[in-house]
Image (cartoon, rainbow, N blue to C red; front, side, top):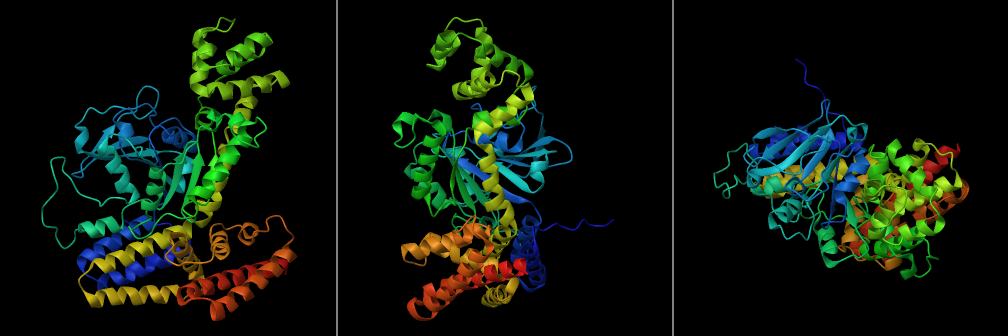
Length: 525
């Protein structure tokens, strides 16, 4: 029987995997066990945690991203657990207990994960959901309990996944105090390889201190590798609840108001996140996951034919919308409100009044466009998918470094350190150097003048050359000239104006600009 070879995100992940494989015979059994876990994760899709405070709409957004209404959104036991959505050839959900046992959990009548469990909840570690879903082929989406919950156990589960707390094996009655065997991972080692590799952080209108703390605590693989613009983006959910009149410069437009608030939040949360994108999660979920039906389209068509005065009255509030007398039944209006909320209903009616011949499918697409989900997916592609190889490789190297640091064998530590240095000297490993420099600047470990720090973040936070240079949409010749100019400037800064720590970062940025120039030159040729 042949063993299926793992598929890596790219050459950097493959190189780190080769390093782990080569080092395994040269390290202790316990460190080797850690390396095996690193190898397993390198061969798996990029793991993105969807995190945020309670009632921020995380699970609704997860359903929209997956394109299937499967994560429970009503409060229940399952919403207090970490749930990993990953690709599988057969749809199934498994309860994973702290002692390692697994139990298959049936979907409910609506095809969702049931919100309540018929087991001892305190003994359950997390849920594993396997779905035949194309989105999950290269992205594992992890739904987390809300931070700020009064349920301390749920908060702890989330913090463990985000790296804010040490991973602890628990049998439901207390800590496991058995002495680990040589092949087991100790607590430090387990923590070193725990956690997601990237985070999609969900905020609403106000950014609070616990949002900042959660982002500061989030780690890719170890407690020393904080979230930053390489592996974290945020979304401003429930954008439709913003009162545009309260936002200066919005001109009464909800999306303009949401964009202004998102820009302010991005300034507040940077450099922890690459961007903040507004979205209406409920509208996205309904339009993308099959929740919008032809019956809903017919009901909206009936609403579009109401007298203007009645229609304006209905839009005054949710209560009035569901209680005011009109030709559309109350039950129908309640159903529409649950699926679309007032903003979605108003958008659909406006579209139907402008084009009464819109089909149900065309109306669904209009609602999806109105949700802002496309913008979120675009950023997921540009920040996460396009850089999955570098993100996974950097997270794996951080894990390898932490595992080596946890050993008591100085010779073992040196062997691992030397192997990593050899890897980083290779030209193709420059992206790892850039991610390291970006993390140092973003975390404040290396202090840079604000304008230079912004430039480092810009160069390292995207794979798009125009965005890297801050000249998106400009001609290739202009991009090439600017890249060469900045490469020269950073080389001079590294040699004459920088501190030793700044100089190390400057050399990496110089190299980045030079490689961009080479790439543009090759494209022109």
